[in-house]
Length: 346
Image 1 (cartoon, rainbow, N blue to C red):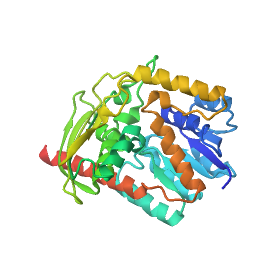
Image 2: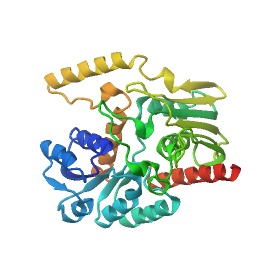
Image 3: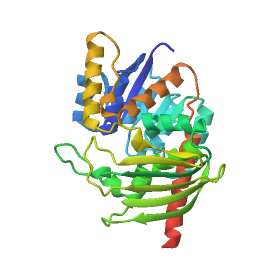
Image 4: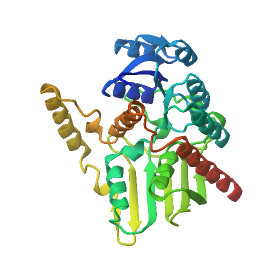
């Protein structure tokens, strides 16, 4: 496949970010976009995207020559978007979660198996430089047998905004449409990371917080245990902290019987100095005609570019992504198990 023609479904913050990243991936061309917002479509048009749709179903049915779509819709529309895209015979990249419940996730697994196209969920944290280095060292046995994993991510959640605050979409706080609160939002990534390092797992304990009296949880603690190695994991997530980018309250610590590793020791100690250095390097690359490293100055956001590049490499080379629809399903299964565990205690 010489050129991959891509459609972007959903042009919110993440959809626009994915679209901009596509412009930096070789042999990838964004040929269509869909969003209900006319201003978002105008933005896409100004960047050279000519086939624009208000209804994403029209993008799927009317855009000839599409090879793949990137789905960045609200959670409750993921299943339908994936189903329609697969039925059109397209390769699919979807923002997590791939669905809001186990039943829909199982249906997606069956659809992917039947379709035979490439399918990948946005497990972006696996592509953070510190996580890649920790995975490589852990697999090489640098800390011995992995016994305990601790992971935490405390952020603003849906309350984060730019210089001009915007109202939070209602679906974020509707349990049926969102599928859950912070455990599904941030906890998804950390539970996926636990599986990445320790394999298939079970939930030993879970506790949900409602500091703001929302219909969904704004804090959660989950304890996991691996079936494969008996490794335990402690997950802490929250939407209750006013964090301002580029500061990012996330860390992963691996404890083995021969040592430990922490992501805090691998990330840039000064995010502003890192941004300045990487920005200067990219400017130099641009001047001499070399390819820039998209979003490298942000450190954390570079993972979004790397995951998309990996997905398109799989499409071009007819390779199956190393994390599949089954991985998305297993993460959703653990999250639902954690919700049920917490409900039983209450």
